[in-house]
Length: 458
Image (cartoon, rainbow, N blue to C red; front, side, top):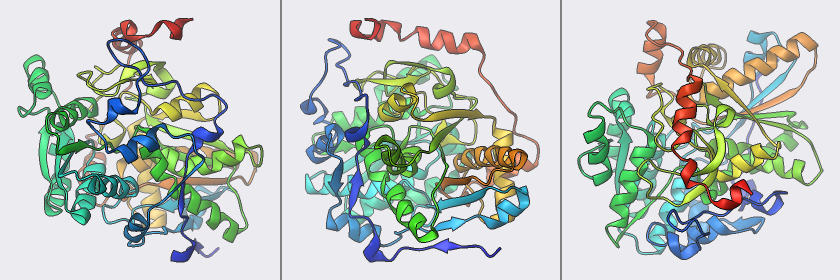
């Protein structure tokens, strides 16, 4: 069977983002003020975000128009291709039909550019001079530094220290786009100094890096903060992926039974799955949507649905999410983009309602899956993306045993061309599987019980 690729014309690119809140049977719980535990309004977010993004954050409209200036930047690399993974199907000997949406075609090499561009655009419209942010594996930092260069905005990035050390070329890429990059925790912020005083050898976490970036943005009226995942408006922007995929499946005269993507904060998973979930929520076509996380950071599969901070120091509002506790510092696995203690409010509520599924996989299985994919399809996937591929292989094996020819779609969220150290460590046997103990999880979650509002227990 010849490999099939499905390309949309530029004129066919969707002109709207999809807001799943409009169709959710249970609307998300509100963010809370950490002191009063009362719901906060849009004005509380104004020191960190431009008002247009805040309005998207709280919107319940089903569709939001994409500005022409954003569409113009999207056209540099979008629409992205949908590819039938026929060689992977052969390698696995499965009757399943496997498709992937390839987001590695963006300038930054991942799906993160889909939200970096509109976030930079809305900040430019609001007169922002500088944006601060965090980055785990570096894909988000790379995407935002590129987007800021497009709109003439300065950019400071706090990169989780373990990734700063593991991925030097990501730092160089961000520097090339004009951004300043700092290993987190750093001595530049009070949040960083607090962590270093307590744990001088800390390898960092996304929660710590978020605290540093938020602190710097809050201290300067000309600076705003941007987040690469978790928040509603970030997930909204990523739905361009799934909206394109729906059109491409019409071209293929097919439709997925299963949609799969990794989940660190939620933007990757939401981007590919939410438009398909719209059809499920509206009673049109059913699918299974599976979010995949590392077994060393299993907030969806072993965490609890609670109110928690999005950052380590407690600078953010309290958000209702599946979490391991904001003080949790994950193992230093190579999939840095998945090393986050909590999941997005939207994905958490969907999981709580049983509308999506979650799976936690060990990193050795994931790197093996990435190698199988590279040998068959020719693209070396990012470590984060290998988690989705590993789950695809599990589902394809089930099809092989049952003889069912199910259609599986996954989001190949980025290439791994800057992650060769990770693959080198895998080939040299330096990587090991890690799974959290029960006591470690319970101890971490116990630290946030006093943050819960009364109505949660009612």
